[in-house]
Length: 411
Image (cartoon, rainbow, N blue to C red; front, side, top):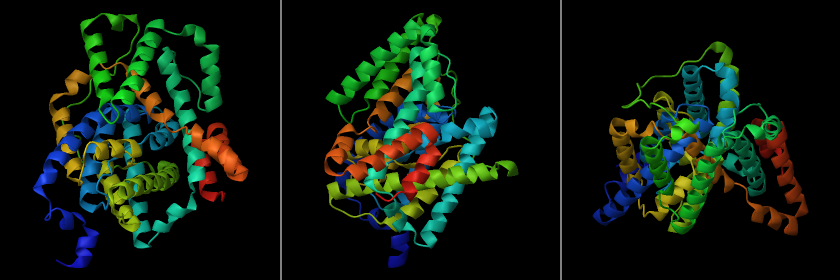
């Protein structure tokens, strides 16, 4: 077969040479990954201001296309916390609070991202990963984590959320702390404690799924919902209709700039995770091929009512530690997600909203690297202050502005 075609479609190279001995590992990894991402994807979709099932669509369809074009063997494709907060901080204003419109706009952002990835592949723009240093990324992720936390704390306390900026949300929380729902707070704190302890003792296992199942059982068979604990509600079963998302011409400017920000962050996150896993497992990834693979992954997500996707480090690490040898694990994960959408959505309607907040809080806490900041302060004060400036920009000015600073600042 033509070498150029194999380079364009890596699946044609590794699949015919697939070793049967790897099937057991990929099967276990795929099932574990699916169980891990079901609650995580729903939580991220909620963070992005979208229906919970939207996150599952991202993993289901994005992963299938990445399997064909990706050069990594363990990278798992889906929504990430940083991308979700970018979408979440803007989607409400663009869609004017219309949930259906929000999904269309979010899908249009993913479609625009796909076009940007294809253009970047054609003009060989894989060097753009060098525009942002690890120092900037440490600051950006920490700032984004603080913004995310400010959006989830009201849910943990059972308080109505308010405010469009970090400072407004924190001030609203402080001034309305007396309205805390004790049942919601107690339920959330217990779940958070169990999640943190479970992840510590059973690292890489779908602990969050166990927490979700337990919470659903408690809500279903007790009267705790009467204490003010809100639940997710009905989730549509089956698959979304595949369609090209079309937005209003007045929204195109907002969609483009959001897509540009998500495109940049998606590539940086994905290539960083892919390189980390490649070094660990003794192979190399192709930075240019990853542009093409992420383009198709975002295209698939966009036409399936999903939103922007990337190769997240947390889900990819779960995939790797569960034994994934090839991207066949993504096909198996998608198969499990298909079964879940067909037969299990009815079981998820009693999932407490506070549990989604707890999953997000636990996930984003890992983005704040205190040790890395201390290390920067000791060895290079200039880089430390650049990182600190990025944190301040993201928190005080906005996530998109923080990305601009991340892209333009040279440490």
